[in-house]
Image (cartoon, rainbow over all chains, first blue to last red; front, side):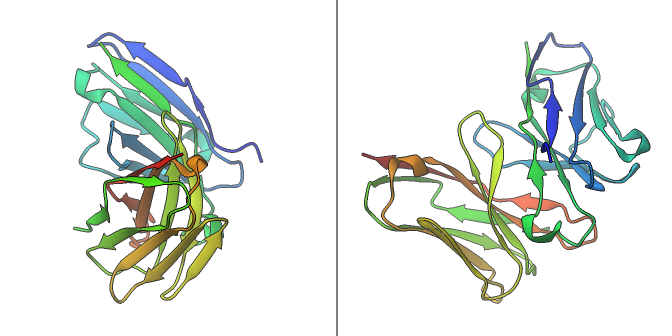
Length: 117
Length: 112
């Protein structure tokens, strides 16, 4: 069990550019979540995958955001035409298929910190 | 819409003292989670509370859940500097998505 891996750890981009983040969940976890956390706030739900199916998207996920999870393994989150308001920590989490994720709940990755300049 | 509130938002305490962080939520849920976050880091799972009356303890931290009052507490006993961090509670929406709604966080600073 190598945990949830996210890449890159940090990304600085100019406004208007596109960025893509990757998340590799724990291998036996069917559920994968993306959250966004801005400074001084708690994480906010963005989207959720059950295997390869994207089952729910938050209203926070504008048309500039797209997430995929091909073959139910790793996931990518793409932001097009980045804006300064997109600057945040993007967290990925995964869990098992049993209810709340069993006795451990989610396991979070280390996050990708995005800075849009 | 489910709302999760924590208080206090900031807590500065002396080493050796006891204190309690409160987490209130607005709709029915019987699953609650506590996480710790160090500056610039991700979230570390502390406790998973899955039923009314659940109590979990780890070292100087003890968490409890009262689903009827929609309240969870995180009690700190004899605080030490290493406990300085931000603590979040999160409530499971139990809607089938099992997404979490996080509280506002409590930033704890333990003074030596």
